[in-house]
Length: 294
Image (cartoon, rainbow, N blue to C red; front, side):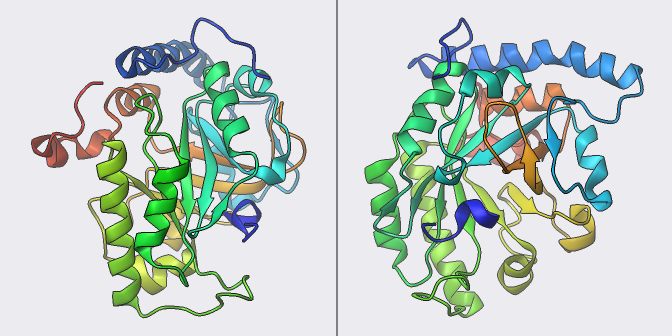
């Protein structure tokens, strides 16, 4: 995920902190999302163009200015952000965090458990992401993911981060499309079996064009577009999450951090939290036992 994924790659407890009971954790997060709807409505009525004025961007790009108008926003994070004050992150209005967990078949992010536990204590809904290394088998990578990432019923769906490893001297090659898709499908299936939740696919413009265009349309996508709106860069791709800057500023995080927006309203976000599915996919996936209230 930009710099945060390059091959390498305490919050205060409160009444909204998720519990180990999956249903209670989801309900508490839904209550928080619903409660934020009033603040979002007031911001809209006041003509504000940014729902989170305490957050910022060191190098804002005019092409993604509309991202700040989305009422549900969050961050993704790895060891490169250093220690995080998760209570401050939450107080700034952060409604979700995706945390780097694993990469390839032998790397765990050094701050994964600190971030995973800290976000939970602060009541920030969080999910884990795995960064794919194309020179390691899909089987090895999923065995490593399952070994190191808790199957926590309160967590957000897992994320499969698919980008080319061109920055890596160990694995600069690009796989044929069919081979890459075969690996991706296997890993998505394993993630779903392990967590019981439909995984999210994170990708960038180049990988999407090379491999994902017109493929895997029944999965939620998280797209990186820092200079234009996703519709201008990702052909025929419906997105659920949009990473719109890698130079964001968020209270509680030192230095640059990726900022992200959810496509929909606070009500749609509450639905996502309670079902672990994009609300637009409920009809398609409910007959598979997915998208049911937790």
